[in-house]
Image (cartoon, rainbow, N blue to C red):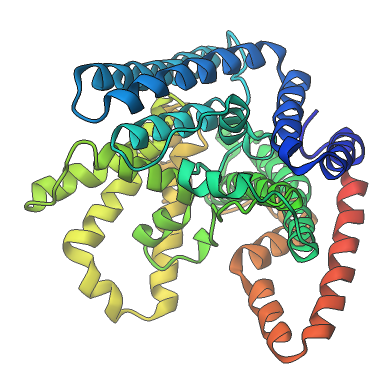
Length: 441
C-alpha cells in the first residue's frame, strides 16, 4: 500500500479519518500512531521491526540526555550513541540496497534524522522531552511524511499535538495539496520517467546530442516531481488531520542561481545539514579556502542524503563547485545579468549536474556529459528522438508549466480580485484533477 494507491485513498485514509473524528481528542494521537504502524506494516513488515527498534532506542536515550544535561559525560555519551546508531543504520541499509541485497525500507532517512535532530536539540537544551511514546512515535513516523519528509523539529511538531482539530479551511487546503501531490507523482513524474527511460534505451552508438539532453531533463523533471509530489501529499495528509507541515520544495527550477536552486530543493533536509552538521562542526567562513570546504561539505552531504552512491556524492560536489564560484566570484556578475540569462545559466548547470545524478555509474555520466557538449558524436538529433519528442510534447509542456509557478501566480491574482470565483474554480479544477489521477491509477 502506497500513499498514491487506491487502497490508501479509498480505504485506509477514510477509515483513519473516521476513527480520528469519532474518538475523544485525547486519543487522536494514539489513533494516528496506530494508523502509522499499520500503514508501515502493510508496506514493509521487516522495515516496521527496524523502525520500532530504532525509534524505541532513541526514546530511551532521550531521558538520560535530558536529566544529565549538556556537557555532562553521560549526556554526551547518550547523544553520541544515538547519533552513531542513526547514521550507521542509514549508511548500512542504504549500502545494502545499493548492492541489491535488500530494498531500502521506507522512511529510514526520515525517522533516523528526525530522531537524531531531536536528541541533539534535547542535549543542547533547545527543546523539552517528549514523554509519551505515542507522541514520539508519531513525531518520527507519521505515515504521511515517511517517503521524503519534510524533516521537522520537535518544537514544530509538539505544539500541534494538543490541538488536533482540523478546520474546514485546513482540510480543504489539505485536499488541494493531496491532489497536487498525487498529480505530480502519478501523472507527471511517472509519465516523464517513462519517457526518459525510452531515451535511455536508445543504444549508445545511436545517441545524439539532443537525445541525451532530453534524457537528462526527463530524469531531472521526474526526480523533482516525485520528491515534490510526495512532499505535497505529506502536507495534504497532515492537514486533513489538523497538522501543518512545512513546504519542502519551492519551485527550484525557477531559481536564478545554483545557490538559489540548492536552497529551494528539499528545504528541510538542507536546513538539517546546515544546523546539525555545519553548525556542529563550528564551521566558519574565514577566507576562500574555508568557505570552499564548508560549501562542498554541505552539498556533498546533501548528495549522500539520497543514498550512499558515488554518483550522488559527485552530484553534490558539482553543485558545490558552482555555488563556490557564485559565492566567491559570481555574485556581483550574476546580479548585473538579465533575469533570463541568470535562469538559463542556472538551468544548464543543474541539468549538467543531473547528468551525474541520473546515471548508473561515473563512466555513464561522463559519456552523457561528453555527448551533451557534442564530443563523440556528430549528430544533433535523429528521427527516433524527434518521434519521441513529438509524441510526448503535451506531457513535457505540462511539466514545464507546472514547475514554473505560473498556475500558482495566476491563482493568487484571481483570489485577490474575485475570492468567491477563485474558490469555485479551485474546487472544480481540483476535483477534475483528482478524477484524472484516479484514471491514471
